[in-house]
Image (tube, rainbow, N blue to C red):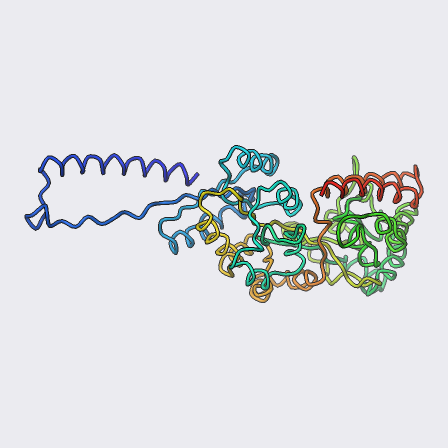
Length: 432
């Protein structure tokens, strides 16, 4: 880690200065000018080390952060060093909470967007809404990624990177059926039936899980919702008519054999990307990482476009990470300098080369020039929606997913299952 190297150097330098002090005190030091009293002692700039907790991918992201972004910041800000503390994702949140509780917080963390409301509710994060530098960052940020930092009227972080899902289709499957990509959600559901070919083991579409990340785009595009805007109530929304209609359509398609095995999951299930590239799934909603997957697999027979429209528009889901500052940090001014730098176009576009999409409007065109495949994702982000930003989201999402599994298994009806999920969601929302 950078911090260890810096501390070792500081220790050696302190010992050297102590030796010089002894020599000067004994009168043995003689300046080149011949007069020790005429020597000018220049004050040394103190070094501050900031700890940056993150779970960057050590193959793609960490090399860019350590060889491009951090060196540039340190060059522009002499006296500030960054300890890039990259750790496994599992356990990172608990480590941040524990250090904060012990009075020795990490200065900065790259947080999962789902963690921000929990940390804000616990008082461990700096409220950025009251910071003079925050308004310009807020104006530059994309609405969806920015919204993941909003909790009870204030913002407790800024976007670091983002992503969303767009519509992917298998060109070979569509060509065989003499069809074009669907423009509407209703057409997509109808096309799933036409594109299903049991003799080839081909399903019309894939849905990669029963969680809100995967089901949410269908619900929102159909005009449904999971909670009210105030995030205080799920009844009437999670079990509302538009949500119920979207879920019912997915369940019907699955039961009739038009959705792949990825929806229910379990042993032997075929994931969406593997299904699309092997001509087993004709349509899929997926994120920008699929571009790399298909490139590595030498699969080029696919197309991308915005999600087919419904009564709610073309509404995908926001993913990504946020930057949060510890409320009890000992170097807030210096930490803020680093956070502002990480939101700059230089840092955002550098990390885009590692596959991280920028959360800021001003970077979209440059990002697309570097990777043309991202263009459709930058367009989709303009209407993408965050999952419920509440500390109870994890429970809410799990309860919804579990009830949807019960509906798929036929253990409860769609109405019964969504009523149960909505009641459970009310309890989860009460936590936040």
